[in-house]
Length: 454
Image (cartoon, rainbow, N blue to C red; front, top):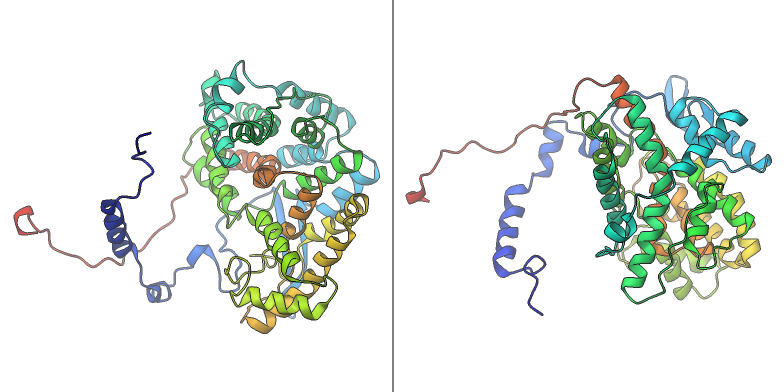
């Protein structure tokens, strides 16, 4: 088989890469000199204010004596506390993701009739165009399902009779369609990937329009289509907690930036997917699971606080796991004392670990959650508190649901499509100017040199 010229790093390419590094480097002192907020972040890690939104709110501070001090984290969807939303639908024994998607898109929680109509419409959209699976998903399946998702979304442009219409009504139609088909893109993409690599048989189950999004995900994924009610309800809670998180996270900001250019819905959502794929954004829960696998290999007594603390300090000193110096699942750009999503999740994680007979692992997670902030405080200079984030427990939940690693980040996307859709509509309704921040050039001026004198 001939070499693939597109994947080979030749000496010439390596030489060019050295030139790229030399000309691309910006001296760190320039950021301070020009007062540039790197990553649009303040010193304490909070984001620079760049927009206004009605969709969601994150609270991590309160004003005491005129000063902002850390507070327990709170998350609101359209002004309603997420803890109250989860408590409401769980106590009523209803699935919640569809209600939350309706709330994010249309501003109010649906009544019974509205929820039934919305669910029925999603069920109608939960089908792919003729031959889409064969023509798009089964051909050359990528190793990363996020690329499968992005490819599917961009290809849907070709099947839309009115793809470039940016009227709100048309965007609502497109977003609801994508919300319904994301589980199909992801799960079918995973089955195609696993089959292509000879790891399993190929399963393409037809979606069930009467089932919730969470139920359909498990139904489509499992060879026998079976799942328990508890499994589906906890997956549903995971979708609710990941559905939206303010306009400042990287993928949602990407949705605003790309939408502000006036482009189509498929391009905007594909851009958000490409942002979420990055391990600094959407891949943290996989890192958490792999880190805990390493802990379980190297810590003999999962209840020994001193032994666990010693391992955590090795992580921070770049002596264990991936040598990154990070304790994955700990800390957040905004939250300091607590991440409300992790708080909500933890009680349900306990129920699932009881049902799955994995209480020892839950105990280990709880101890790491307790000890990690202390380890970080002793080893690092930090500007705010550190607590576990939603990724700390979500990976554990997905592992108890027997979900493959390849679907962890796509599950994030299956939920966040609701928030992205709401933010795209908000940008279209309130936009007008393309988002265009400023950059200061620090490149010295030079004269042009003719070819014969270079």
